Length: 343
Image (cartoon, rainbow, N blue to C red; front, side):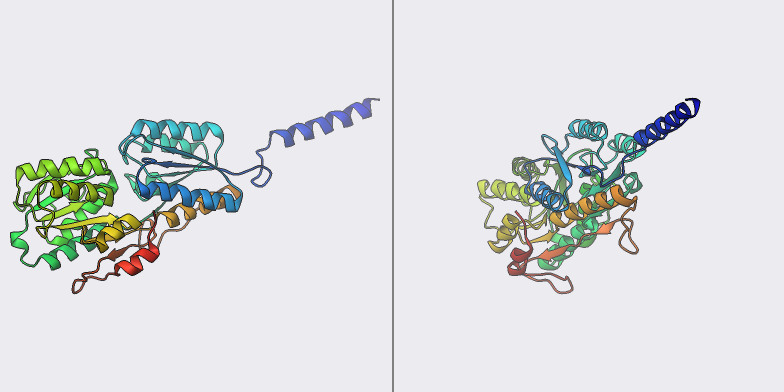
């Protein structure tokens, strides 16, 4: 009887040990979270579609969250907390505040979640396990070089800078400083925008990355100087708003150069129609699908994605789209841009 009791006790101990071991990936559904800046911007709409399609293909449960507007940091923090509590294996995030979000994301990493930044690098970039993004500095530099070559005598340029928001997330700074570098303007401190003292710059205005913000920003800058002839915009919704403001001011046919970044189908159409002179096209569906694949690999075997050789992130590519190519600036035309566009 004593021997039987010892055997039963041993079996119960083994059963308890197995019950308390962490479940292996494959014994339950892998969960992933996607946190974007908004659900309005076509770029993030497509990012969400790309993530969902890949998650469905791989059998991953995907939860999605978004800020109310670009810059809504608090909603993103709450989303991170929800993802940790839900037991997700990883988070994909396009951060609104690339500095402040690092603390909650570190809490996620400490809890065992893989954190991947999409489109917008965190500050520091090592606050994420990996980053899948456009080379945003290069995207800005391409439109800056194109604008300088197309304009001709750049000493006569009168430039409006339409940025994202005053928190200056990394994507905002990289595109802005890339454009100014490409145009041939001294950027002073390349880690932030707005400190330049070049008299050709009328000013910097935030747009929140949307059409209304682009229109308001353009109106303010036209009040400062009605002779603006070059307009840099962070993204195509802001560019569309800037064009509406120029049109309302009777300046739409004045040959003002508008350049932007995104490469969505509406933006490429605007290039074709002459509203935007050139745009740098990026690929949000690729960013999202690669991110979902990375979370699956992390959940199954603990591997992390590798960076593009020579870079501290995985470069998902960028192409300048224009029907007015500039000497020495590589580009594709709008026909090819439409083949590759999204939205």
